[in-house]
Image 1 (cartoon, chains in turn red, green):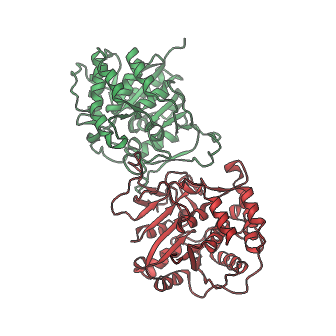
Image 2: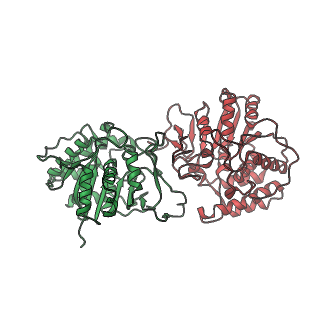
Image 3: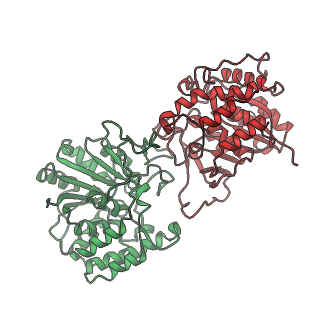
Length: 318
Length: 318
């Protein structure tokens, strides 16, 4: 049996971040060694509060949680997405307040330190705007050499965007940071809306979380309630797109992408209508996925098997 | 029986332009009343020469052909796409030279005059860069009120581009002109790569054109030979994407789009990586095509029935 992969999680908790967190805590394939928060769905400070509270409920006060960037590289935090994630970021659910406070380090500092402690094996799972990762790359440009892999929930390759017609929210919230991440010399797996919008959790599956006797798992089910309402007009039923959870599952090896070519990806950092979009060069892929030579960015276009059963099963089996 | 729709054709002939021309000449649903040429696949002057030569072969010296813009709104003509369309734009095929010369008017002037002669019924079919149409709108801003409909082969909504990862060649060659066309107050049907890349002509179908005793139809089959080579790596067989022909068929009512929502479309006129792309707002379309109120741009995402049989049949039956 191989030892679990050490994971640094960068998140903006966030409803689907909470689900991804529950999965990563439960998966025997990974071990979360540190968490940094960033403004996105909610402010970095509130995301840290939500994360600390969730970890206490889960009995995992051992995991350091560092507050990362409040503002983004070239603009201030825009106020989050309360209409999606609720006023407090976790669907309005009030959790027991954890006794501990965030780690005194910044998220970027924590990440750099973890990259030394777990040199060559650390896996970064980034499910919020990529500001902290850009700061870490600036703080220590040698970081990529010590990181085994980076998995990002972000972008829209051929699928429509969500925050604009062309852009997905995580990348749109800090296009410059996404560009810096994609320009660095490490293996990146990008999990864009093309894949995540095709994976949903049913009301029945949410019910399985609610029915769990453990307060943490029950709380995750409760947190999803508001999010299920948000997706009603999109899918025609109460459900949840599994954005961040899919990235977590792919990172932990719980699902194998059906189509994930290695292709150049450019982030539009202009102020034009394409701002924040991820332009992947997907020309010439009609005859099957074709990797471009020397490219280290893998774009997950499709995960064929529904991922929700594995997600729920893993969380419940923990 | 309704009378045929008067059509002004704007083209950069061009291999697939030649096929579209053959179809529009043959279709009983339309009557070409004038043609303007523009630089794109080849220079505007050479496109006019090719068009004149084709029309003479087809016995249609009655149709005026005006040379339109050599250069585009904010940049000079880039030299065409000889690797796709051959050095002379029509796959290297040398046609008998027509005796007549182009109309003395510019394409924009011709279009404006035709819009008066056929006020309320004129249909514009634009299958090259949209420079001439932008010039016509500038020459006479009242033009849209006299035009019944505009059908454009251009753009890529969710499909990859062809000239860049995000942009289709006609729009990329003059993004400002495309933006002007889409901003005008008329009904536009945009036929982008999403639809056109899914429609191809087989070698057997090309053989039916070659076998026709009429020199014009035979020549169209010959012209396609080089283009069939170009598409070999894309499709894994010698074939032709039916870009311009599909737009012509849709304009003439020979095919009904399966999915064609009316949605806002913005052209990226920046110098960034998204330059020349058509950003269609296709969010919220999972439950079926949904038109946005007040939008007059219809984006053809899919034509379900293979269009090649109708195309070939119409050309041969003429």
